[in-house]
Length: 292
Image (cartoon, rainbow, N blue to C red; front, side, top):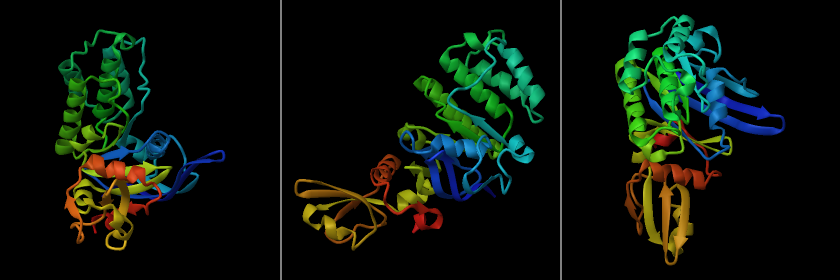
């Protein structure tokens, strides 16, 4: 099943296109890293998937063809944005009760156990929690709904390193045990590299790359060679980006092997992301093309 399917998807705010001509087909069971610079369209895409915004062009579906925001989709999709809205005057136990009353698939045992594991007392008012504790509470509410698709918009910003590690562990447990699919927007690429199995890179409101991480890493190489040959390199392999320093050139290319005259090595996910962000005008790479 595909958890996300988009065709020529676009979203415009007045005269500004936040997203344009986006195509995606994401299978279920992945932790999807959604990365890009500020203003790339990450939050807009997540809001479209959650049904909180309507497309200006194209179409998008979730969970095998359901319209975002429909009754069928709402039950299976959880969305946590950067603001983490909570009932600040309610005690944590009452926040849980409100959530239980609003969700038919609520897992009360999981919610209480997870809050206990991160040291959040049920008697404390939500507004008196620290920023990190509020983030943990908001994440617990999102997961305890037992969604099939969890959308997270920069959820780690207010967490310390140990808390971020706990969040990542909870997400991976959900993927492994419950078949949860996660779309995780973040600027911290090295953190995502440890857990992501699918990568979407947005730049300038367009999808630059969207494919499984493993196939992307296998299908790209970092190349080092003479700067005088950099211009001709594109005649040998598809080049994503190239830079020159003195007599030496470095390139990111879509190839499994280095061409003659160039030394090659495997790339990291961070190098892959930075390469596509440095060259947003490169031909968008999506779906099966990414594995060639």
